[in-house]
Image 1 (cartoon, rainbow, N blue to C red):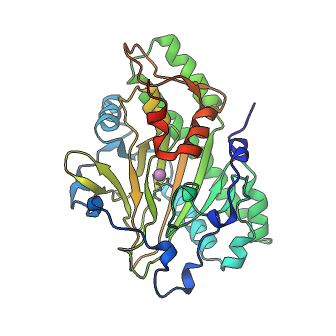
Image 2 (image 1 turned 90 degrees about the vertical axis):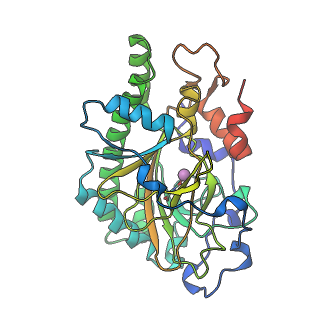
Image 3 (image 1 turned 90 degrees about the horizontal axis):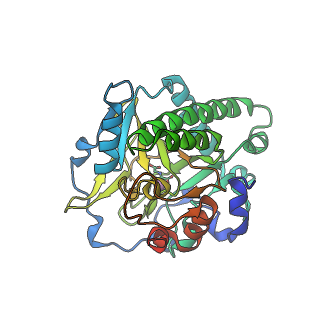
Length: 345
Ligand code: OGA
Ligand code: NI
Protein backbone atom coordinates (compact mmCIF):
# COMPACT_ATOMS: atom_id res chain seq x y z
CA UNK A 1 0.00 0.00 0.00
CA UNK A 2 1.30 3.46 -0.87
CA UNK A 3 1.94 5.84 1.99
CA UNK A 4 1.00 9.48 1.85
CA UNK A 5 4.61 10.67 1.64
CA UNK A 6 5.28 8.31 -1.31
CA UNK A 7 2.59 10.12 -3.28
CA UNK A 8 5.00 13.05 -3.56
CA UNK A 9 7.95 11.09 -4.92
CA UNK A 10 6.42 11.16 -8.42
CA UNK A 11 6.45 14.93 -8.56
CA UNK A 12 10.01 16.07 -7.84
CA UNK A 13 10.37 19.84 -7.46
CA UNK A 14 13.21 22.12 -8.46
CA UNK A 15 15.30 23.55 -5.62
CA UNK A 16 14.29 27.14 -6.34
CA UNK A 17 10.71 26.05 -5.67
CA UNK A 18 11.68 24.70 -2.25
CA UNK A 19 14.19 27.17 -0.76
CA UNK A 20 12.57 30.16 0.99
CA UNK A 21 14.08 33.62 1.05
CA UNK A 22 16.29 34.70 3.95
CA UNK A 23 13.68 37.14 5.22
CA UNK A 24 15.78 38.61 8.06
CA UNK A 25 18.26 40.28 5.78
CA UNK A 26 15.77 42.35 3.77
CA UNK A 27 14.85 46.04 3.94
CA UNK A 28 12.53 45.92 0.91
CA UNK A 29 10.45 43.32 -0.91
CA UNK A 30 12.50 41.93 -3.83
CA UNK A 31 10.89 41.79 -7.26
CA UNK A 32 10.66 37.98 -6.99
CA UNK A 33 8.16 38.49 -4.13
CA UNK A 34 6.08 41.39 -5.50
CA UNK A 35 2.62 40.19 -6.52
CA UNK A 36 0.37 42.08 -8.92
CA UNK A 37 -2.71 43.61 -7.28
CA UNK A 38 -6.11 42.35 -8.31
CA UNK A 39 -9.56 43.97 -7.97
CA UNK A 40 -10.79 41.58 -5.31
CA UNK A 41 -7.87 42.31 -3.00
CA UNK A 42 -9.63 44.65 -0.60
CA UNK A 43 -10.94 42.67 2.37
CA UNK A 44 -14.30 43.44 3.94
CA UNK A 45 -14.17 44.44 7.57
CA UNK A 46 -15.74 42.83 10.62
CA UNK A 47 -17.42 40.07 8.63
CA UNK A 48 -15.25 37.58 10.49
CA UNK A 49 -17.50 38.04 13.47
CA UNK A 50 -20.00 35.80 11.72
CA UNK A 51 -17.73 32.81 11.27
CA UNK A 52 -19.54 30.09 13.20
CA UNK A 53 -18.17 28.90 16.53
CA UNK A 54 -19.16 25.33 17.35
CA UNK A 55 -18.89 23.81 20.82
CA UNK A 56 -18.18 20.11 20.36
CA UNK A 57 -20.14 19.37 23.57
CA UNK A 58 -23.26 21.03 22.17
CA UNK A 59 -26.15 18.51 21.95
CA UNK A 60 -26.94 19.90 18.48
CA UNK A 61 -23.36 19.55 17.30
CA UNK A 62 -24.27 17.56 14.14
CA UNK A 63 -26.64 20.27 12.90
CA UNK A 64 -24.25 23.05 13.82
CA UNK A 65 -21.26 21.51 12.07
CA UNK A 66 -23.36 20.64 9.05
CA UNK A 67 -24.72 24.18 8.82
CA UNK A 68 -21.25 25.68 9.21
CA UNK A 69 -19.80 23.42 6.51
CA UNK A 70 -22.62 24.26 4.10
CA UNK A 71 -22.70 27.99 4.61
CA UNK A 72 -19.10 28.95 5.37
CA UNK A 73 -16.88 25.91 4.81
CA UNK A 74 -14.97 27.10 7.85
CA UNK A 75 -15.72 27.31 11.56
CA UNK A 76 -14.02 27.53 14.93
CA UNK A 77 -14.30 24.67 17.41
CA UNK A 78 -14.21 24.87 21.17
CA UNK A 79 -14.04 21.93 23.60
CA UNK A 80 -11.84 20.29 20.99
CA UNK A 81 -9.74 18.25 23.42
CA UNK A 82 -6.32 19.84 22.78
CA UNK A 83 -5.09 21.35 26.01
CA UNK A 84 -3.90 24.97 26.11
CA UNK A 85 -0.52 23.73 27.33
CA UNK A 86 -0.13 21.43 24.31
CA UNK A 87 -1.00 24.27 21.91
CA UNK A 88 1.38 26.61 23.71
CA UNK A 89 4.08 23.92 23.50
CA UNK A 90 3.58 23.53 19.74
CA UNK A 91 3.75 27.28 19.27
CA UNK A 92 6.91 27.53 21.33
CA UNK A 93 8.58 24.79 19.29
CA UNK A 94 7.42 26.45 16.08
CA UNK A 95 9.11 29.69 17.13
CA UNK A 96 12.21 27.75 18.21
CA UNK A 97 12.45 26.17 14.75
CA UNK A 98 11.85 29.25 12.63
CA UNK A 99 14.14 31.42 14.82
CA UNK A 100 17.12 29.27 13.84
CA UNK A 101 19.62 30.85 11.42
CA UNK A 102 18.89 30.05 7.76
CA UNK A 103 21.95 27.77 7.31
CA UNK A 104 20.64 25.61 10.18
CA UNK A 105 17.16 25.38 8.68
CA UNK A 106 18.67 24.56 5.29
CA UNK A 107 20.18 21.40 6.82
CA UNK A 108 16.66 19.98 6.97
CA UNK A 109 15.44 21.26 3.61
CA UNK A 110 12.72 19.08 2.06
CA UNK A 111 14.15 16.85 -0.67
CA UNK A 112 12.93 17.54 -4.23
CA UNK A 113 10.99 14.27 -4.14
CA UNK A 114 10.36 14.30 -0.39
CA UNK A 115 7.52 15.34 1.84
CA UNK A 116 8.98 16.12 5.28
CA UNK A 117 11.25 19.07 6.00
CA UNK A 118 11.82 22.80 5.74
CA UNK A 119 10.81 24.78 2.66
CA UNK A 120 8.25 26.78 0.74
CA UNK A 121 4.60 25.81 0.33
CA UNK A 122 4.00 22.93 -2.09
CA UNK A 123 1.97 25.21 -4.35
CA UNK A 124 5.06 27.35 -5.11
CA UNK A 125 5.70 25.89 -8.61
CA UNK A 126 2.30 27.12 -9.81
CA UNK A 127 3.24 30.79 -9.43
CA UNK A 128 5.83 33.00 -11.05
CA UNK A 129 6.15 35.01 -7.82
CA UNK A 130 7.35 33.65 -4.48
CA UNK A 131 5.59 33.75 -1.14
CA UNK A 132 6.41 35.59 2.08
CA UNK A 133 6.39 32.29 3.90
CA UNK A 134 8.55 29.45 5.16
CA UNK A 135 7.22 26.13 6.39
CA UNK A 136 8.12 22.85 7.99
CA UNK A 137 6.11 19.85 6.82
CA UNK A 138 5.76 16.75 8.97
CA UNK A 139 4.38 13.55 7.47
CA UNK A 140 4.64 10.37 9.53
CA UNK A 141 7.52 9.89 11.97
CA UNK A 142 10.56 10.76 9.86
CA UNK A 143 10.73 14.26 11.38
CA UNK A 144 12.70 12.82 14.33
CA UNK A 145 15.81 12.62 12.13
CA UNK A 146 15.32 16.26 11.15
CA UNK A 147 14.95 17.32 14.78
CA UNK A 148 18.19 15.51 15.67
CA UNK A 149 19.98 17.51 12.98
CA UNK A 150 18.56 20.80 14.23
CA UNK A 151 19.04 20.21 17.95
CA UNK A 152 21.49 17.30 18.47
CA UNK A 153 21.33 17.62 22.26
CA UNK A 154 17.83 18.86 22.65
CA UNK A 155 15.55 17.33 20.04
CA UNK A 156 13.26 15.45 22.40
CA UNK A 157 11.21 18.49 23.37
CA UNK A 158 10.25 19.08 19.74
CA UNK A 159 9.55 15.40 19.07
CA UNK A 160 7.41 14.89 22.17
CA UNK A 161 5.27 17.92 21.49
CA UNK A 162 4.81 17.06 17.81
CA UNK A 163 3.97 13.43 18.66
CA UNK A 164 1.36 14.47 21.15
CA UNK A 165 -0.04 17.05 18.77
CA UNK A 166 -0.34 14.54 15.91
CA UNK A 167 -2.20 12.10 18.20
CA UNK A 168 -4.60 14.70 19.57
CA UNK A 169 -5.24 16.19 16.14
CA UNK A 170 -6.02 12.73 14.77
CA UNK A 171 -8.53 12.09 17.55
CA UNK A 172 -10.15 15.45 16.88
CA UNK A 173 -10.24 14.84 13.12
CA UNK A 174 -11.97 11.48 13.73
CA UNK A 175 -14.51 13.14 16.00
CA UNK A 176 -15.26 15.84 13.44
CA UNK A 177 -15.54 13.36 10.59
CA UNK A 178 -17.99 11.19 12.56
CA UNK A 179 -20.12 14.26 13.06
CA UNK A 180 -19.88 15.16 9.39
CA UNK A 181 -20.73 11.60 8.26
CA UNK A 182 -23.83 11.71 10.43
CA UNK A 183 -24.95 14.85 8.68
CA UNK A 184 -24.65 13.24 5.23
CA UNK A 185 -27.58 10.85 5.86
CA UNK A 186 -25.73 7.65 5.05
CA UNK A 187 -27.10 4.17 5.65
CA UNK A 188 -25.82 2.57 8.85
CA UNK A 189 -23.65 0.19 6.84
CA UNK A 190 -22.15 2.99 4.77
CA UNK A 191 -21.49 5.06 7.86
CA UNK A 192 -19.73 2.20 9.58
CA UNK A 193 -17.63 1.39 6.46
CA UNK A 194 -16.55 4.99 6.21
CA UNK A 195 -15.80 5.23 9.91
CA UNK A 196 -13.50 2.19 9.59
CA UNK A 197 -11.77 3.68 6.57
CA UNK A 198 -11.24 7.00 8.30
CA UNK A 199 -9.79 5.27 11.36
CA UNK A 200 -7.36 3.30 9.20
CA UNK A 201 -6.10 6.34 7.39
CA UNK A 202 -2.50 7.40 7.84
CA UNK A 203 -2.96 10.23 5.36
CA UNK A 204 -2.20 13.26 7.42
CA UNK A 205 0.31 16.05 7.60
CA UNK A 206 1.24 18.63 10.17
CA UNK A 207 2.43 21.88 8.68
CA UNK A 208 4.22 24.56 10.70
CA UNK A 209 4.01 27.94 8.97
CA UNK A 210 5.94 31.16 9.48
CA UNK A 211 5.05 34.50 7.87
CA UNK A 212 7.84 36.93 8.81
CA UNK A 213 7.22 40.66 9.24
CA UNK A 214 7.21 42.21 5.79
CA UNK A 215 8.68 45.63 4.79
CA UNK A 216 5.73 46.21 2.41
CA UNK A 217 2.84 43.86 3.19
CA UNK A 218 0.67 45.25 0.36
CA UNK A 219 3.07 43.96 -2.25
CA UNK A 220 3.69 40.50 -0.83
CA UNK A 221 1.51 37.49 -0.08
CA UNK A 222 1.91 34.79 2.60
CA UNK A 223 -0.03 32.12 0.74
CA UNK A 224 -1.93 32.90 -2.48
CA UNK A 225 -5.58 31.84 -2.81
CA UNK A 226 -5.92 28.06 -2.73
CA UNK A 227 -8.04 25.22 -1.43
CA UNK A 228 -6.71 22.42 0.77
CA UNK A 229 -6.68 19.02 -0.95
CA UNK A 230 -7.65 16.58 1.79
CA UNK A 231 -10.86 16.12 3.82
CA UNK A 232 -10.40 18.60 6.64
CA UNK A 233 -7.82 21.10 7.85
CA UNK A 234 -7.55 22.00 11.52
CA UNK A 235 -5.60 25.19 12.15
CA UNK A 236 -4.05 26.71 15.26
CA UNK A 237 -3.18 30.38 14.82
CA UNK A 238 -3.11 32.38 17.95
CA UNK A 239 -1.12 35.55 17.78
CA UNK A 240 -2.20 37.64 14.78
CA UNK A 241 -4.68 37.59 11.96
CA UNK A 242 -3.66 36.90 8.39
CA UNK A 243 -5.91 34.11 7.19
CA UNK A 244 -8.76 35.22 4.90
CA UNK A 245 -11.48 33.29 3.12
CA UNK A 246 -13.18 34.28 -0.10
CA UNK A 247 -16.90 34.67 0.30
CA UNK A 248 -19.30 35.02 -2.63
CA UNK A 249 -22.19 37.44 -2.59
CA UNK A 250 -20.13 40.60 -2.72
CA UNK A 251 -18.28 40.01 0.54
CA UNK A 252 -14.89 39.33 -1.01
CA UNK A 253 -11.99 38.45 1.28
CA UNK A 254 -13.12 37.96 4.87
CA UNK A 255 -10.52 37.89 7.67
CA UNK A 256 -10.59 34.88 9.98
CA UNK A 257 -9.51 35.86 13.45
CA UNK A 258 -8.83 33.21 16.00
CA UNK A 259 -11.25 32.99 18.88
CA UNK A 260 -9.16 32.49 22.05
CA UNK A 261 -8.63 28.79 22.74
CA UNK A 262 -10.54 27.68 19.64
CA UNK A 263 -9.18 25.83 16.63
CA UNK A 264 -10.21 26.73 13.07
CA UNK A 265 -11.56 23.92 10.88
CA UNK A 266 -12.01 24.14 7.14
CA UNK A 267 -13.45 21.89 4.46
CA UNK A 268 -11.01 20.50 1.89
CA UNK A 269 -11.45 19.14 -1.64
CA UNK A 270 -12.00 15.47 -0.70
CA UNK A 271 -14.91 16.39 1.56
CA UNK A 272 -16.28 18.57 -1.22
CA UNK A 273 -16.28 15.49 -3.50
CA UNK A 274 -17.70 13.08 -0.88
CA UNK A 275 -20.50 15.48 -0.04
CA UNK A 276 -21.22 16.09 -3.76
CA UNK A 277 -20.55 19.79 -3.27
CA UNK A 278 -22.91 20.13 -0.27
CA UNK A 279 -19.90 21.11 1.83
CA UNK A 280 -17.90 23.31 -0.52
CA UNK A 281 -14.14 23.44 -0.23
CA UNK A 282 -13.09 26.86 0.98
CA UNK A 283 -10.91 29.22 -1.02
CA UNK A 284 -8.47 30.95 1.34
CA UNK A 285 -5.24 32.93 1.41
CA UNK A 286 -2.82 34.40 3.95
CA UNK A 287 -1.82 38.07 3.97
CA UNK A 288 1.27 39.33 5.78
CA UNK A 289 1.87 42.14 8.23
CA UNK A 290 4.30 45.03 8.46
CA UNK A 291 4.53 44.75 12.23
CA UNK A 292 4.00 41.12 13.22
CA UNK A 293 5.72 37.86 12.50
CA UNK A 294 2.93 35.28 12.45
CA UNK A 295 3.16 31.53 12.94
CA UNK A 296 0.45 28.92 12.49
CA UNK A 297 0.10 25.14 12.61
CA UNK A 298 -2.17 23.25 10.25
CA UNK A 299 -3.20 19.62 10.46
CA UNK A 300 -4.43 18.13 7.19
CA UNK A 301 -6.46 14.94 7.37
CA UNK A 302 -7.38 12.63 4.51
CA UNK A 303 -8.39 9.11 3.53
CA UNK A 304 -6.03 6.19 2.78
CA UNK A 305 -4.26 7.04 -0.48
CA UNK A 306 -5.52 3.91 -2.25
CA UNK A 307 -9.16 4.43 -1.26
CA UNK A 308 -11.78 5.59 -3.71
CA UNK A 309 -13.52 8.93 -3.32
CA UNK A 310 -16.85 9.67 -4.91
CA UNK A 311 -20.04 11.40 -3.84
CA UNK A 312 -21.50 9.45 -0.92
CA UNK A 313 -25.08 8.92 0.10
CA UNK A 314 -28.17 8.81 -2.00
CA UNK A 315 -27.50 11.64 -4.40
CA UNK A 316 -29.42 11.44 -7.62
CA UNK A 317 -26.87 13.34 -9.67
CA UNK A 318 -23.27 12.73 -8.64
CA UNK A 319 -21.26 15.74 -9.77
CA UNK A 320 -17.80 14.16 -9.51
CA UNK A 321 -16.14 11.13 -11.04
CA UNK A 322 -14.97 8.39 -8.77
CA UNK A 323 -11.17 8.23 -8.33
CA UNK A 324 -8.56 7.25 -5.77
CA UNK A 325 -7.09 9.72 -3.30
CA UNK A 326 -3.70 9.18 -4.93
CA UNK A 327 -5.15 10.02 -8.35
CA UNK A 328 -6.76 13.16 -7.00
CA UNK A 329 -3.54 14.37 -5.36
CA UNK A 330 -1.76 13.63 -8.66
CA UNK A 331 -4.26 15.81 -10.57
CA UNK A 332 -3.97 18.54 -7.95
CA UNK A 333 -0.16 18.44 -8.14
CA UNK A 334 -0.38 18.91 -11.88
CA UNK A 335 -3.35 21.20 -12.36
CA UNK A 336 -3.65 22.92 -8.99
CA UNK A 337 -6.92 24.85 -8.68
CA UNK A 338 -8.45 23.30 -11.80
CA UNK A 339 -8.43 19.83 -10.19
CA UNK A 340 -12.05 19.79 -8.99
CA UNK A 341 -13.45 21.09 -12.27
CA UNK A 342 -11.43 18.49 -14.18
CA UNK A 343 -13.18 15.63 -12.39
CA UNK A 344 -16.69 17.04 -12.77
CA UNK A 345 -19.14 14.82 -14.57
C1 OGA B 1 -2.24 26.16 4.61
C2 OGA B 1 -2.96 27.36 5.06
C3 OGA B 1 -3.29 29.06 6.74
C4 OGA B 1 -2.53 29.80 7.79
O1 OGA B 1 -1.18 25.84 5.23
O2 OGA B 1 -2.71 25.51 3.65
O3 OGA B 1 -3.90 27.75 4.40
O4 OGA B 1 -3.17 30.64 8.43
N1 OGA B 1 -2.56 27.97 6.19
O5 OGA B 1 -1.34 29.57 7.96
NI1 NI C 1 -4.59 26.17 3.13
